[in-house]
Image 1 (cartoon, rainbow, N blue to C red):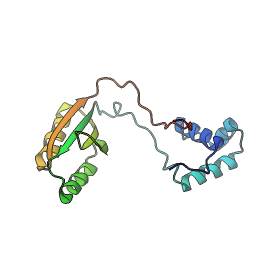
Image 2 (tube, rainbow, N blue to C red; image 1 turned 90 degrees about the vertical axis):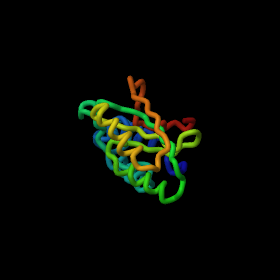
Image 3 (spheres, rainbow, N blue to C red; image 1 turned 180 degrees about the vertical axis):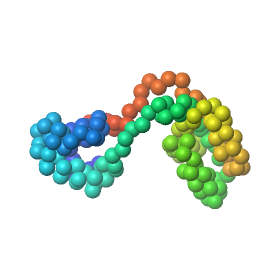
Length: 159
């Protein structure tokens, strides 16, 4: 949903926050030519409108010992509501699954997984995914090198 109340200055504020949300409102104001209080009001409005969902610290998974990053596609064995809901609950409870998307196409889900090592990754695949009877198949791809990753959303109107 496009927010009609946003303008160029709001997008500039969002761009600044996406680079570093810890910067002060006064510093953002200097960069976008507004007072700190005007920046604060705009940020508060964008929070109330749901444009800004929250502000977090981005952690480095490798520095935290999570050496294996993988993308896993999952095909379910059953699409009965109870089975799908059980799968959703299980995936939601797994801290090593940092993202899960429902897909169109040959696979039903795409998971982004972070594990300490291949042994932990193997346990996740065999114990947490395949050992429940609701998953027909999984395919995994280990990340060798990350070419691009950003948390910044495209803010231009022609995104």
